Image (tube, rainbow, N blue to C red; front, side, top):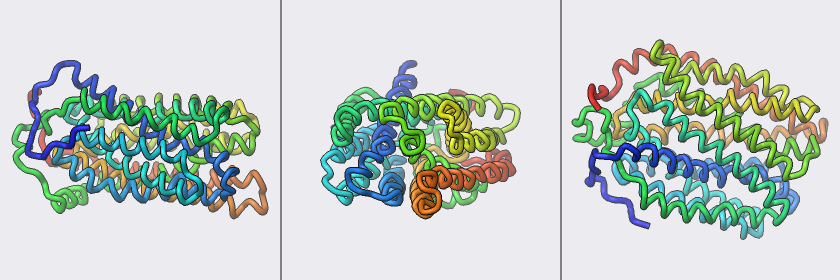
Length: 438
Protein backbone atom coordinates (compact mmCIF):
# COMPACT_ATOMS: atom_id res chain seq x y z
CA UNK A 1 0.00 0.00 0.00
CA UNK A 2 1.43 3.42 -0.94
CA UNK A 3 2.55 5.58 1.92
CA UNK A 4 0.70 8.85 2.52
CA UNK A 5 2.13 11.69 0.45
CA UNK A 6 3.69 14.76 2.04
CA UNK A 7 1.45 17.71 2.70
CA UNK A 8 3.20 19.89 0.12
CA UNK A 9 1.89 17.84 -2.78
CA UNK A 10 -1.50 19.32 -3.68
CA UNK A 11 -3.43 17.38 -6.33
CA UNK A 12 -4.89 18.85 -9.46
CA UNK A 13 -8.29 20.50 -9.23
CA UNK A 14 -9.33 18.73 -12.45
CA UNK A 15 -11.56 15.74 -11.80
CA UNK A 16 -13.75 13.70 -14.12
CA UNK A 17 -17.50 14.09 -13.77
CA UNK A 18 -17.74 10.59 -12.37
CA UNK A 19 -14.94 11.01 -9.83
CA UNK A 20 -17.14 12.46 -7.03
CA UNK A 21 -19.74 9.69 -7.40
CA UNK A 22 -17.08 6.96 -7.50
CA UNK A 23 -15.26 8.40 -4.50
CA UNK A 24 -18.49 8.81 -2.50
CA UNK A 25 -19.56 5.24 -3.29
CA UNK A 26 -16.19 3.79 -2.25
CA UNK A 27 -15.96 5.91 0.89
CA UNK A 28 -19.48 4.79 1.83
CA UNK A 29 -18.35 1.16 1.50
CA UNK A 30 -15.36 1.96 3.73
CA UNK A 31 -17.75 3.38 6.33
CA UNK A 32 -19.82 0.23 6.03
CA UNK A 33 -16.70 -1.83 6.82
CA UNK A 34 -16.12 0.53 9.75
CA UNK A 35 -19.43 -0.40 11.34
CA UNK A 36 -19.39 -4.04 10.31
CA UNK A 37 -16.18 -4.40 12.27
CA UNK A 38 -17.28 -2.13 15.12
CA UNK A 39 -20.79 -3.47 15.67
CA UNK A 40 -20.30 -7.16 14.91
CA UNK A 41 -19.55 -7.52 18.60
CA UNK A 42 -23.18 -6.60 19.33
CA UNK A 43 -24.54 -9.69 17.58
CA UNK A 44 -21.79 -11.92 19.00
CA UNK A 45 -21.63 -10.67 22.58
CA UNK A 46 -24.18 -13.09 24.08
CA UNK A 47 -22.19 -16.00 22.62
CA UNK A 48 -18.92 -14.49 23.87
CA UNK A 49 -20.47 -13.78 27.28
CA UNK A 50 -21.42 -17.44 27.70
CA UNK A 51 -18.09 -18.70 26.36
CA UNK A 52 -15.94 -16.46 28.58
CA UNK A 53 -18.32 -16.03 31.55
CA UNK A 54 -18.63 -12.23 31.35
CA UNK A 55 -20.96 -9.74 33.06
CA UNK A 56 -23.03 -7.04 31.33
CA UNK A 57 -20.60 -4.42 32.61
CA UNK A 58 -17.70 -6.28 30.97
CA UNK A 59 -19.69 -6.43 27.73
CA UNK A 60 -20.29 -2.69 27.94
CA UNK A 61 -16.59 -2.08 28.51
CA UNK A 62 -15.70 -4.34 25.59
CA UNK A 63 -18.15 -2.88 23.07
CA UNK A 64 -17.94 0.71 24.23
CA UNK A 65 -15.34 2.25 26.50
CA UNK A 66 -12.26 0.25 25.48
CA UNK A 67 -12.92 0.94 21.80
CA UNK A 68 -13.90 4.58 22.29
CA UNK A 69 -10.88 5.48 24.44
CA UNK A 70 -8.30 4.68 21.78
CA UNK A 71 -10.63 5.83 18.97
CA UNK A 72 -10.98 9.35 20.31
CA UNK A 73 -7.37 9.59 21.49
CA UNK A 74 -5.88 8.64 18.13
CA UNK A 75 -8.51 10.47 16.09
CA UNK A 76 -7.26 13.99 16.87
CA UNK A 77 -3.62 13.61 15.68
CA UNK A 78 -4.67 11.53 12.67
CA UNK A 79 -7.16 14.21 11.63
CA UNK A 80 -4.50 16.92 12.04
CA UNK A 81 -2.28 14.82 9.74
CA UNK A 82 -5.15 14.42 7.27
CA UNK A 83 -5.59 18.20 7.01
CA UNK A 84 -2.01 18.29 5.68
CA UNK A 85 -1.40 14.90 4.04
CA UNK A 86 -2.96 12.62 1.44
CA UNK A 87 -6.38 11.82 2.89
CA UNK A 88 -7.17 8.93 0.56
CA UNK A 89 -4.04 6.99 1.52
CA UNK A 90 -4.61 7.63 5.22
CA UNK A 91 -8.11 6.12 4.90
CA UNK A 92 -6.78 3.09 3.01
CA UNK A 93 -4.12 2.46 5.67
CA UNK A 94 -6.67 2.84 8.47
CA UNK A 95 -9.08 0.40 6.78
CA UNK A 96 -6.34 -2.23 6.45
CA UNK A 97 -5.40 -1.88 10.13
CA UNK A 98 -8.90 -2.13 11.62
CA UNK A 99 -9.91 -4.97 9.32
CA UNK A 100 -6.82 -6.98 10.24
CA UNK A 101 -7.50 -6.42 13.96
CA UNK A 102 -11.10 -7.58 13.49
CA UNK A 103 -9.85 -10.82 11.96
CA UNK A 104 -7.38 -11.23 14.83
CA UNK A 105 -10.24 -10.86 17.34
CA UNK A 106 -11.28 -14.38 16.37
CA UNK A 107 -8.00 -15.74 17.77
CA UNK A 108 -8.49 -14.26 21.27
CA UNK A 109 -8.28 -16.89 24.01
CA UNK A 110 -9.42 -14.74 26.93
CA UNK A 111 -11.13 -11.46 27.79
CA UNK A 112 -7.89 -9.43 27.93
CA UNK A 113 -6.79 -10.57 24.47
CA UNK A 114 -10.18 -9.75 23.00
CA UNK A 115 -10.12 -6.35 24.74
CA UNK A 116 -6.71 -5.58 23.21
CA UNK A 117 -7.91 -6.65 19.76
CA UNK A 118 -10.86 -4.28 20.06
CA UNK A 119 -8.45 -1.50 21.05
CA UNK A 120 -6.61 -2.24 17.79
CA UNK A 121 -9.86 -1.94 15.85
CA UNK A 122 -10.45 1.44 17.49
CA UNK A 123 -6.94 2.61 16.57
CA UNK A 124 -7.52 1.81 12.91
CA UNK A 125 -11.02 3.26 12.76
CA UNK A 126 -9.77 6.56 14.19
CA UNK A 127 -8.29 7.23 10.74
CA UNK A 128 -11.48 6.57 8.79
CA UNK A 129 -14.20 9.21 9.03
CA UNK A 130 -12.48 12.61 9.57
CA UNK A 131 -10.33 12.32 6.40
CA UNK A 132 -13.37 10.99 4.50
CA UNK A 133 -15.50 13.94 5.61
CA UNK A 134 -12.80 16.33 4.43
CA UNK A 135 -12.60 14.58 1.04
CA UNK A 136 -16.36 14.73 0.57
CA UNK A 137 -16.44 18.46 1.35
CA UNK A 138 -13.90 18.98 -1.46
CA UNK A 139 -15.73 16.72 -3.89
CA UNK A 140 -19.17 18.35 -3.39
CA UNK A 141 -20.22 22.04 -3.22
CA UNK A 142 -21.86 23.45 -0.07
CA UNK A 143 -25.41 23.21 -1.42
CA UNK A 144 -25.00 19.43 -1.96
CA UNK A 145 -22.83 18.75 1.07
CA UNK A 146 -25.59 17.70 3.48
CA UNK A 147 -26.93 15.08 1.07
CA UNK A 148 -23.42 13.80 0.26
CA UNK A 149 -22.55 13.55 3.96
CA UNK A 150 -25.78 11.67 4.61
CA UNK A 151 -25.15 9.22 1.77
CA UNK A 152 -21.71 8.58 3.24
CA UNK A 153 -23.12 8.32 6.75
CA UNK A 154 -25.72 5.79 5.57
CA UNK A 155 -22.76 3.43 5.22
CA UNK A 156 -22.91 3.23 9.01
CA UNK A 157 -26.28 1.53 8.89
CA UNK A 158 -25.47 -0.47 5.76
CA UNK A 159 -22.55 -1.89 7.71
CA UNK A 160 -24.85 -2.69 10.62
CA UNK A 161 -27.27 -4.38 8.20
CA UNK A 162 -24.57 -6.56 6.63
CA UNK A 163 -22.91 -7.27 9.96
CA UNK A 164 -26.13 -8.40 11.59
CA UNK A 165 -27.23 -10.62 8.69
CA UNK A 166 -23.87 -12.23 8.03
CA UNK A 167 -22.87 -12.23 11.68
CA UNK A 168 -26.06 -13.91 12.86
CA UNK A 169 -26.04 -16.61 10.19
CA UNK A 170 -22.31 -17.35 10.34
CA UNK A 171 -22.15 -17.28 14.14
CA UNK A 172 -25.01 -19.78 14.36
CA UNK A 173 -23.24 -22.03 11.86
CA UNK A 174 -19.54 -21.61 12.71
CA UNK A 175 -19.24 -19.74 16.02
CA UNK A 176 -18.07 -16.25 16.92
CA UNK A 177 -14.38 -16.78 16.17
CA UNK A 178 -14.83 -17.59 12.47
CA UNK A 179 -17.32 -14.74 12.18
CA UNK A 180 -14.68 -12.19 13.17
CA UNK A 181 -12.25 -13.66 10.64
CA UNK A 182 -14.77 -13.83 7.80
CA UNK A 183 -15.81 -10.20 8.22
CA UNK A 184 -12.32 -8.79 8.78
CA UNK A 185 -10.34 -10.10 5.81
CA UNK A 186 -12.37 -8.44 2.96
CA UNK A 187 -11.63 -5.00 4.38
CA UNK A 188 -7.87 -5.50 3.90
CA UNK A 189 -8.46 -6.27 0.21
CA UNK A 190 -10.78 -3.29 -0.28
CA UNK A 191 -8.13 -0.99 1.21
CA UNK A 192 -5.85 -1.82 -1.73
CA UNK A 193 -8.64 -1.07 -4.21
CA UNK A 194 -9.43 2.25 -2.55
CA UNK A 195 -5.80 3.38 -2.72
CA UNK A 196 -5.69 2.55 -6.44
CA UNK A 197 -9.02 4.07 -7.57
CA UNK A 198 -9.95 7.15 -5.50
CA UNK A 199 -8.28 10.46 -6.43
CA UNK A 200 -7.28 13.22 -4.04
CA UNK A 201 -9.18 16.45 -4.91
CA UNK A 202 -7.78 19.95 -4.48
CA UNK A 203 -8.26 21.05 -0.87
CA UNK A 204 -10.80 23.86 -0.64
CA UNK A 205 -11.78 23.63 -4.33
CA UNK A 206 -15.27 25.11 -3.69
CA UNK A 207 -13.91 28.13 -1.83
CA UNK A 208 -11.61 30.92 -3.00
CA UNK A 209 -8.30 29.55 -4.26
CA UNK A 210 -6.40 31.55 -1.64
CA UNK A 211 -7.59 29.24 1.12
CA UNK A 212 -4.76 26.85 0.25
CA UNK A 213 -2.10 29.45 1.00
CA UNK A 214 -2.30 29.04 4.78
CA UNK A 215 -2.28 25.89 6.88
CA UNK A 216 -3.82 26.70 10.28
CA UNK A 217 -1.86 25.61 13.32
CA UNK A 218 -3.38 23.37 15.97
CA UNK A 219 -3.84 26.35 18.27
CA UNK A 220 -5.57 28.39 15.55
CA UNK A 221 -7.90 25.52 14.74
CA UNK A 222 -8.88 25.02 18.37
CA UNK A 223 -9.49 28.75 18.86
CA UNK A 224 -11.72 28.92 15.78
CA UNK A 225 -13.78 25.91 16.88
CA UNK A 226 -14.12 27.24 20.43
CA UNK A 227 -15.40 30.55 19.05
CA UNK A 228 -18.42 28.90 17.44
CA UNK A 229 -21.11 28.35 20.05
CA UNK A 230 -23.26 26.52 17.51
CA UNK A 231 -20.49 23.98 16.88
CA UNK A 232 -19.86 23.43 20.59
CA UNK A 233 -23.58 22.87 21.23
CA UNK A 234 -23.84 20.51 18.24
CA UNK A 235 -20.99 18.47 19.76
CA UNK A 236 -22.69 18.33 23.17
CA UNK A 237 -26.12 17.50 21.73
CA UNK A 238 -24.74 14.77 19.48
CA UNK A 239 -22.81 13.27 22.39
CA UNK A 240 -25.93 13.13 24.58
CA UNK A 241 -27.97 11.66 21.72
CA UNK A 242 -25.36 8.96 21.13
CA UNK A 243 -25.12 8.21 24.84
CA UNK A 244 -28.67 6.95 24.43
CA UNK A 245 -28.13 5.56 20.93
CA UNK A 246 -25.02 3.49 21.65
CA UNK A 247 -26.12 2.71 25.19
CA UNK A 248 -29.24 0.96 23.91
CA UNK A 249 -28.10 -0.09 20.45
CA UNK A 250 -25.15 -2.11 21.71
CA UNK A 251 -27.59 -4.24 23.74
CA UNK A 252 -30.30 -4.54 21.07
CA UNK A 253 -29.36 -8.13 20.17
CA UNK A 254 -29.27 -9.07 23.85
CA UNK A 255 -32.79 -7.66 24.30
CA UNK A 256 -34.18 -9.95 21.60
CA UNK A 257 -32.20 -12.98 22.74
CA UNK A 258 -32.84 -12.72 26.49
CA UNK A 259 -36.38 -11.34 26.65
CA UNK A 260 -38.03 -12.39 23.41
CA UNK A 261 -36.29 -15.76 23.04
CA UNK A 262 -35.25 -15.46 19.38
CA UNK A 263 -32.37 -17.34 17.76
CA UNK A 264 -29.16 -15.60 16.72
CA UNK A 265 -30.01 -15.95 13.03
CA UNK A 266 -33.49 -14.47 13.62
CA UNK A 267 -32.02 -11.59 15.61
CA UNK A 268 -29.47 -10.85 12.90
CA UNK A 269 -32.13 -10.68 10.19
CA UNK A 270 -34.51 -8.58 12.30
CA UNK A 271 -31.84 -6.10 13.34
CA UNK A 272 -30.67 -5.81 9.73
CA UNK A 273 -34.08 -4.36 8.89
CA UNK A 274 -35.07 -2.60 12.14
CA UNK A 275 -31.59 -1.28 12.92
CA UNK A 276 -29.81 -1.22 9.54
CA UNK A 277 -32.26 -0.45 6.73
CA UNK A 278 -34.18 2.00 8.90
CA UNK A 279 -30.96 3.81 9.78
CA UNK A 280 -29.98 4.11 6.12
CA UNK A 281 -33.35 5.69 5.33
CA UNK A 282 -33.21 8.08 8.28
CA UNK A 283 -29.61 9.13 7.66
CA UNK A 284 -30.30 9.97 4.02
CA UNK A 285 -33.51 11.82 4.90
CA UNK A 286 -31.68 13.90 7.51
CA UNK A 287 -29.21 15.36 5.03
CA UNK A 288 -31.70 15.56 2.17
CA UNK A 289 -34.24 17.49 4.25
CA UNK A 290 -31.59 19.78 5.71
CA UNK A 291 -30.22 20.72 2.27
CA UNK A 292 -33.70 21.75 1.16
CA UNK A 293 -34.97 23.36 4.34
CA UNK A 294 -31.88 25.48 5.07
CA UNK A 295 -32.67 27.47 1.92
CA UNK A 296 -35.61 28.87 3.92
CA UNK A 297 -33.96 28.94 7.34
CA UNK A 298 -30.41 27.81 8.13
CA UNK A 299 -31.46 26.77 11.61
CA UNK A 300 -32.83 23.59 10.02
CA UNK A 301 -29.24 22.28 10.16
CA UNK A 302 -29.95 21.69 13.87
CA UNK A 303 -33.74 21.60 13.83
CA UNK A 304 -33.74 18.39 11.75
CA UNK A 305 -31.72 16.53 14.45
CA UNK A 306 -33.85 18.15 17.17
CA UNK A 307 -37.10 16.83 15.68
CA UNK A 308 -35.48 13.45 15.04
CA UNK A 309 -34.74 13.09 18.76
CA UNK A 310 -38.23 14.24 19.75
CA UNK A 311 -39.98 11.82 17.38
CA UNK A 312 -37.80 8.86 18.33
CA UNK A 313 -38.60 9.02 22.07
CA UNK A 314 -42.18 7.63 22.20
CA UNK A 315 -41.34 4.89 19.70
CA UNK A 316 -38.33 3.85 21.78
CA UNK A 317 -40.45 3.26 24.87
CA UNK A 318 -42.60 0.78 22.94
CA UNK A 319 -39.44 -0.87 21.60
CA UNK A 320 -37.99 -1.49 25.07
CA UNK A 321 -41.13 -2.29 27.05
CA UNK A 322 -43.54 -4.15 24.76
CA UNK A 323 -43.79 -7.96 24.89
CA UNK A 324 -45.24 -8.16 21.36
CA UNK A 325 -42.28 -8.97 19.08
CA UNK A 326 -43.95 -7.60 15.94
CA UNK A 327 -44.69 -4.32 17.70
CA UNK A 328 -41.16 -4.19 19.10
CA UNK A 329 -39.63 -4.58 15.62
CA UNK A 330 -41.87 -1.86 14.14
CA UNK A 331 -41.08 0.47 17.04
CA UNK A 332 -37.34 -0.12 16.69
CA UNK A 333 -37.57 0.62 12.96
CA UNK A 334 -39.25 3.98 13.60
CA UNK A 335 -36.96 4.81 16.54
CA UNK A 336 -33.81 4.22 14.51
CA UNK A 337 -35.11 6.06 11.44
CA UNK A 338 -35.96 9.18 13.45
CA UNK A 339 -32.77 9.06 15.57
CA UNK A 340 -30.40 8.65 12.61
CA UNK A 341 -31.37 11.95 10.96
CA UNK A 342 -28.84 13.87 13.06
CA UNK A 343 -25.47 13.02 11.52
CA UNK A 344 -25.62 14.46 7.97
CA UNK A 345 -26.90 17.92 9.01
CA UNK A 346 -24.45 18.14 11.92
CA UNK A 347 -21.48 17.34 9.70
CA UNK A 348 -22.67 19.71 6.98
CA UNK A 349 -23.05 22.71 9.28
CA UNK A 350 -19.72 21.98 11.01
CA UNK A 351 -17.81 21.88 7.71
CA UNK A 352 -19.59 24.98 6.40
CA UNK A 353 -18.44 26.93 9.46
CA UNK A 354 -14.71 26.27 9.15
CA UNK A 355 -11.70 26.73 6.85
CA UNK A 356 -11.20 23.83 4.38
CA UNK A 357 -7.85 23.03 6.01
CA UNK A 358 -9.65 22.49 9.34
CA UNK A 359 -12.37 20.09 8.19
CA UNK A 360 -10.84 16.72 9.06
CA UNK A 361 -9.86 18.07 12.46
CA UNK A 362 -13.36 19.50 12.96
CA UNK A 363 -14.89 16.09 12.26
CA UNK A 364 -12.39 14.51 14.65
CA UNK A 365 -13.38 16.92 17.44
CA UNK A 366 -17.07 16.23 16.81
CA UNK A 367 -16.44 12.48 16.81
CA UNK A 368 -14.17 12.78 19.86
CA UNK A 369 -17.03 14.18 21.93
CA UNK A 370 -19.65 11.87 20.41
CA UNK A 371 -17.64 8.71 20.95
CA UNK A 372 -16.06 9.52 24.29
CA UNK A 373 -19.44 10.24 25.89
CA UNK A 374 -21.77 8.27 23.62
CA UNK A 375 -19.85 5.13 22.75
CA UNK A 376 -17.50 5.24 25.73
CA UNK A 377 -20.06 5.75 28.49
CA UNK A 378 -23.41 4.71 26.96
CA UNK A 379 -22.97 0.92 26.75
CA UNK A 380 -20.97 0.84 29.99
CA UNK A 381 -23.74 2.72 31.82
CA UNK A 382 -26.42 0.40 30.43
CA UNK A 383 -24.42 -2.63 31.51
CA UNK A 384 -23.81 -1.27 35.02
CA UNK A 385 -27.48 -0.30 35.51
CA UNK A 386 -28.63 -3.68 34.19
CA UNK A 387 -26.33 -5.53 36.60
CA UNK A 388 -27.52 -3.28 39.46
CA UNK A 389 -31.22 -3.94 38.72
CA UNK A 390 -30.80 -7.66 38.06
CA UNK A 391 -31.39 -8.72 41.69
CA UNK A 392 -34.85 -7.10 41.70
CA UNK A 393 -35.98 -7.47 38.10
CA UNK A 394 -34.11 -10.49 36.73
CA UNK A 395 -33.94 -10.66 32.94
CA UNK A 396 -36.06 -7.48 32.65
CA UNK A 397 -33.27 -5.44 34.23
CA UNK A 398 -31.81 -4.92 30.73
CA UNK A 399 -34.95 -3.36 29.28
CA UNK A 400 -35.30 -0.96 32.23
CA UNK A 401 -31.64 0.03 31.94
CA UNK A 402 -32.23 0.76 28.25
CA UNK A 403 -35.23 2.96 29.09
CA UNK A 404 -33.20 5.04 31.55
CA UNK A 405 -30.27 5.54 29.18
CA UNK A 406 -32.57 6.29 26.24
CA UNK A 407 -34.45 9.02 28.13
CA UNK A 408 -31.15 10.70 29.01
CA UNK A 409 -30.28 10.67 25.30
CA UNK A 410 -33.59 12.32 24.42
CA UNK A 411 -32.61 15.48 26.29
CA UNK A 412 -30.28 16.23 23.36
CA UNK A 413 -33.28 17.77 21.56
CA UNK A 414 -33.14 20.73 23.95
CA UNK A 415 -29.43 21.30 23.26
CA UNK A 416 -30.01 21.20 19.48
CA UNK A 417 -32.70 23.84 20.00
CA UNK A 418 -30.23 26.13 21.80
CA UNK A 419 -27.66 25.56 19.01
CA UNK A 420 -30.21 27.00 16.59
CA UNK A 421 -29.99 30.35 18.36
CA UNK A 422 -26.42 30.85 17.08
CA UNK A 423 -26.33 29.09 13.67
CA UNK A 424 -27.34 32.00 11.41
CA UNK A 425 -25.03 34.54 13.03
CA UNK A 426 -22.03 32.20 13.01
CA UNK A 427 -22.53 30.96 9.45
CA UNK A 428 -22.51 34.62 8.39
CA UNK A 429 -19.03 35.05 9.87
CA UNK A 430 -17.64 31.68 8.82
CA UNK A 431 -13.93 31.29 8.23
CA UNK A 432 -14.01 31.07 4.42
CA UNK A 433 -16.45 32.70 2.01
CA UNK A 434 -17.75 30.28 -0.65
CA UNK A 435 -16.48 30.80 -4.17
CA UNK A 436 -18.95 32.44 -6.51
CA UNK A 437 -18.06 30.07 -9.34
CA UNK A 438 -17.26 26.40 -9.30
